[in-house]
Length: 516
Image 1 (cartoon, rainbow, N blue to C red):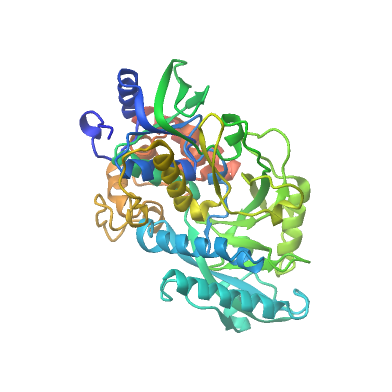
Image 2: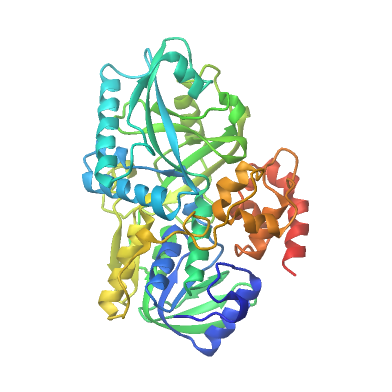
């Protein structure tokens, strides 16, 4: 296993100094057991899996942790109801199992139960559709039971009256409202924060985590690594190479054929929907398995999503929503709202690309979300497909394949029992003062005591509940190297450009002061 020099041995702390020390270590000893390419949720999960098995592991990411698809999700940790509706029982059950792992063992501090309200409004659904939705929810509850997730955590589906529906989503349309169906699923406080927690926990178990590090000339046992900060390069040899590049996987392994699908979300103020405590769930006209969600988020926002559109062509660093997608989302959610949203209500928008395996014809909405682990002619092991909820199983399958094909000596996977940094069972978690802001606890869990020790607990800007201490902690403990890392990935201030503009100056100063 990698041994990190000095104060970093066995710690979750990621910072610029650790990065420099570990690069020096690699220059001296450029042979490892496993190289993981890609710093999204699957790559970070694979690095943790491998390091926890005792393998000398290096994770490289050309940009930043959670730079790609992993930060553009709905933040739902879901039980696979949509896949159940389309007959993909195996995928649905895998989702339910992995949801339970996250909510009960590995990251309960980052995932909360989220009620989902399907309003029963005259004319909103076709005749009999409400019965189909309820049947789907009941089947989803059966999946929850089979996965062993307690009903106290995710209650069974129930029907509520119109008054309770309005309490859950005050902005719901009242004319023709007879009540609603309420089911529960899991929701991450922040998808990018899960990725950071995985990477930090991997570092605790000895993994070397290097952002701004591009992998080129990749083969099954080596890669040329170029430091994006200094331009210096080194050739790393590895007994196995795992490509977890997501939608960029084909750039690492040209034999991979992907068909990206774009999922778009709009960001609006929670006040526009009356500060809902449940996700408003609106059936997409003409579909029995697709919904548009209005999902309460941190920072006083609601995310409205999502689309499922073909996205051919070159892969952009940051995909952009189309006018048609924005119109579709507004039109669909407005059918269930008392006061219609307009484009003036949209404070921000984002889009992510799903790395779906190209299986031929058909709409992307119909393509399987099952993941695959493939070996290229050069011996590169690529993991593609899947979804955020099942990242842990994807990582396990990728590392299992590397161990089997390359004859690596490693213990069995145990990440289903391994608490991430901030989880109550993590060794570094501590109680925090009773007056600790709830938003800080939601984002950091048992590591909030470290955050409070990092600096000033006052907000970074008026109207934002992100503290100055969290900005400093992002640099000193979470591997943020510049203000963009902080604004767009360690916090989600950047989802609304006006918020980022207001916070930018203070963030720049804190990053410069902390990074010295």
